[in-house]
Length: 389
Ligand SMILES: *Cc1c(COP(=O)(O)O)cnc(C)c1O
Image (cartoon, rainbow, N blue to C red):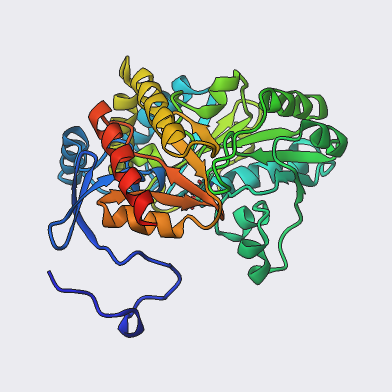
């Protein structure tokens, strides 16, 4: 394996702050770099590798599909899309699914449906869009326009209009709502914004306000969905039913796929020709996602996510006594006094992969298959890393 050229000699656009590590192989919850060094993965490539690395069933499903058909395009029927959509709807809420290739594309689709809701279903009477401070919805212009943080948006201004409210503030939402609101976008737990959990009842009131004013409630489950928080979808903790849910990250277990799940109220607004994608929902990506969902929906799987999440949370609370540990299931954040980067780096040196979230939060989002012993190992390695910083 050749050592890559220094950044100054790289042919890559330098738009990432990358760690000086190159993973070349994985197995279960472990990763191996090009020197054969082993790491425990408590990040899952930003909550993506839900079944860990080289999961035998996922490898078999992808290999089988690759040998059968990779791509045919949405000009034709795709059996795997039908099967995957049925599973998603039956594990979520009544509606229909549109497949795409990433999180931001899923939110673009949701955004366009919100526009159709205002322009077509309500004759142009609903134009306003509401989202929340500190949220993250993606990097394309539509998704960026509903992402509040100035550091992501401002370099690309001007943006389509969006109003931002304090996250978790249902009273502020009540004051802002009106008959002219087309849609409200929110994450059930803010993943990039520091693993922020809203106060109990916030989602239910957002649901109630959207219903009262005829606005679509769009729940961005791109990071929280597919079992990550111990429920199939995080909004199910609150027993609310969104109008639209967006998925990506963990859905394909590492194969790129996104989905916009459109409730029955709005699914039929997307007529033929109004939206589409060349690659979205191709047989390979769907075969991967079908396998991920089948595993996550196996009886007992989600209960284990909750157990391992509770174990990890308790370990973190003990290790970081006095600091807030936020999140649910296996999406957890530890509030630090400052930048998490030094601790992330020290953990890597101890053979542990963790990540940052926001400006001052350490993020843990291990594969959902992590074992009890591996959770203990995460805490042990983090303890050593902490001593080094
Ligand atoms: C990662 C993420 C996105 C963007 O997904 P991409 O696949 O990077 O486009 C959108 N919303 C949330 C909540 C995310 O965590």
